[in-house]
Image (cartoon, rainbow, N blue to C red):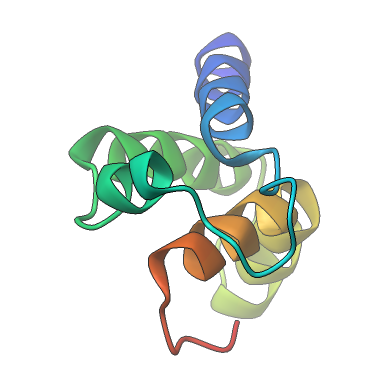
Length: 88
């Protein structure tokens, strides 16, 4: 499970781990790539989340804290690139 979660985590970091060079300026190719939710992103997020459940975070508060501590920066960049109003 750990190797699968590490690969999913790395793929998300590779895709969303870097901010645009100019603050507030999202390149058109990034906008196009993030205009819809990529099913692979959801799968990778699910794998990372499942790893925390397997490791014992089975209630929401514990799971959310561990998940966001692990990959929260990437999730927030994903949210920002997508223009979401989610405030997580």
